[in-house]
Amino acid sequence: MKDLDTIPGLMADLGARAKAAAQDLAFASAEAKEQALTAAADAIWARRDEIIAANAQDMEFGRDKGLSKAMMDRLMLDESRVQAMADGIRAVAAQPDPVGEVLTEWDMPSGLHIRRVRTPLGVIGVIYESRPNVTADAGALCLKSGNAVILRGGSESFHSARAIHACLVDGLRAAGLPEDAIQLVPTRDRAAVSELLTMTDYVDVIVPRGGKGLVGLVQREARVPVFAHLEGIVHIYLDRSADLQTAVDVVLNAKTRRTGICGAAECLLVHEEIAATVGRAVIEALAAAGVEVRAAGALAQIDGTLPASEADWGKEYLDMIIAAKPVADVDEAIAHIRRYGSSHTDCIIAEEADTVARFFERLDSAILMHNASTQFADGGEFGMGAEIGIATGKMHARGPVGARELTSYKYLVTGQGALRG
Image 1 (spheres, rainbow, N blue to C red):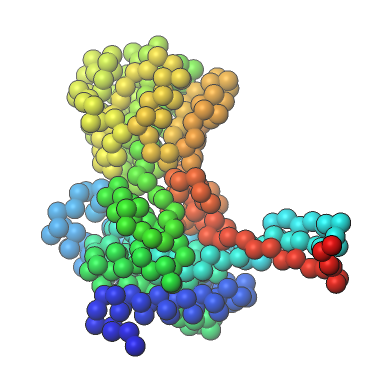
Image 2 (image 1 turned 135 degrees about the horizontal axis):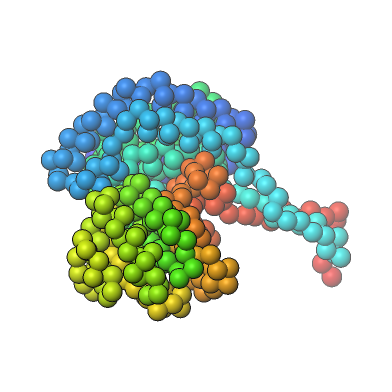
């Protein structure tokens, strides 16, 4: 008998129920999962006023807590963002079901026919901070991939997450799927996070989605395997072959569209031969848009910049701030990114194909871009409908983690009385 009045008891109960739900969900039909997701999206839109009212409570909590402008932007929901949440769930619903997909198959001389097929991971624990839309994205992706999920949102998004979760449960109920397939930790107590990280009997993988502090805590304390999602220390390198208008447009969008997301540009590297031309134009455009540019070397001579310090390299600002530095060539840019980057997303603005190829070949970030805003580092923009995060590790999943990335595989082996000699 679990003591639900204690955090260990509460979390063990969530885990046991999630594991039981996962066993049923693993063979749920594609049609039932699609029905559940469509009904959940309909519920989110129908109950948008409730969700926005709950979010207003969270916004007040965030203001009292002194959250930054960027973090408040992450937290805020309005009608258009609720619509985007519902649309994201519908996009996931419409995707092919990954479970049971045959990845490869072959015959052996022994008479065996072998298939490698996708199978759910089981129970996924998702730990995230202020963005309430993660509740919808993670719940939808886990359901689509046949996994049960335990969601632990940040204290800032507590009320929004509860309102969104209720809509996801409505969807499960409408499709006759186990309601315990998507559970939300019902407390702000941080002890629940520590408990979730050690629930090896119930949880198969942990996905942290948040800042360096959260991810560091998860990596230190977890006994359950982790899909690492490190901070987005995103670099853009302006090569000497960069087109001026492309450079200005891409860098402005990458920095200013939404400063509080992990795909926002944080460091600008400029080939020294164009520092006074393209580099100046880009920096002046950033300054005119209200961005604080912390610059080094020749770029520091540009009006409106502030001097950069060593602490500005490898910094995720999540704010209207960017670091800028001249480099001798693409190799120096690569060396800087290797030293200070987080293997999340990095971009080159260039017209020389050989230079782009060198950048792509010699950097190992999860996402590398050419002449495109780093704000596209998003599962929805990659055609995945939504994402549970951007994985920056090298095991199992990298880049945007969609429904397919939340599966493993198993081997199905058939014979006709095959015997091993």
